[in-house]
Image (cartoon, rainbow, N blue to C red):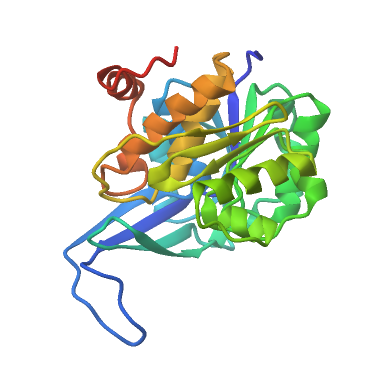
Length: 312
């Protein structure tokens, strides 16, 4: 167990969230029932999830020199997140996500990256000391891929574990994936990475085993309401999800990743860390929004206790 901060390198967005009974068809206009403007972005969501789960966290990323950027920086401070390595980009606006949520809690998202596309190799070099002394580094794919690769290289060189949430989905080379300690794809992302479809838990188990065969150390293939398939070089196991009423799935994966990082940084074995992360993700989907839905540590521990799950 390393004693440094958890470091998130990734996207920072303002989420514009609208609720509607169903998703609109092409050319169709629907009336919505609710609208909210909430902090988001996969990287920022993960950072908030880490902070609320009790982790010490530093954020590396970029926002624009605009009112959204001001709001998001203030939100980081309110959550106890170190923003020394969050830069301002005058030539680009803060990233924005337009999110539609239907009556079943499923979402459809359009992301305009803005300043997130400006997170550069120079930013990574400025964060080198922080990355090399981290307990865990968390990454996603809403910043340039060359920046992601550079972070992985620095962390790997310093022996720092890397968790990659490979979203938004895109094909990635095996050479990059095998440098990652833990990969946490959802079904769609796993299918894009492998070029194969998942129709069942057995399919997910086979695909997770294939990722391990590629040389990825640990695979946590997320199946939404069906739980997680955990694959390592020693075993493959299906860990069921907690049954909850789904309100909005927007930040479920990011919440899972943040909870996972905290539990691992505290020294818990992977299986126990997955139980904790499952609970963080489950609570997040019972509420509307991204960061506004992420639970605090006490809520997660109470949730696990009420369900008789022994994780610590």
